[in-house]
Image 1 (tube, rainbow, N blue to C red):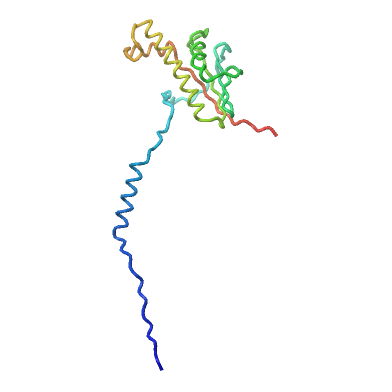
Image 2: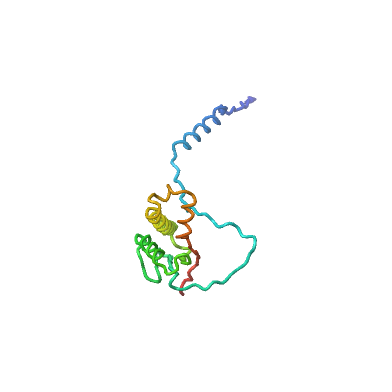
Length: 177
């Protein structure tokens, strides 16, 4: 009778001591070599928070209102007619400069939530560029220097002369059956 002895099979060991080091080096390599897109955003100075929560209803003259609307398919409507985003700066400048009551003008921005953020961002930049250009032109006429070179008091006077008055609303357009 022959007995067979079963040999224990040994599993070869894998030396994993340097695996963590290699993983860490690869992680650093990919973090360093990967380019990250910078997020773009809108710089806004919000009004101070009012402790009194009073709602006031104001009568607004229609000649003091410029209505902008951005639709779901990224069309810009200025006072209910289609307009080009490239002309928005000039349109806003003309409206603010020639508004009958310049300090009480309002630019209403109505944006559909399905509109492209890049289009919204471009529209906002054009509006800000219009206010910057108006203030820059007035600074050059009054003080013979750029807006940036003006003193803080002069800048505040220019901002008071051309106040930034933008009211925004967002809507979800209903789908037609």
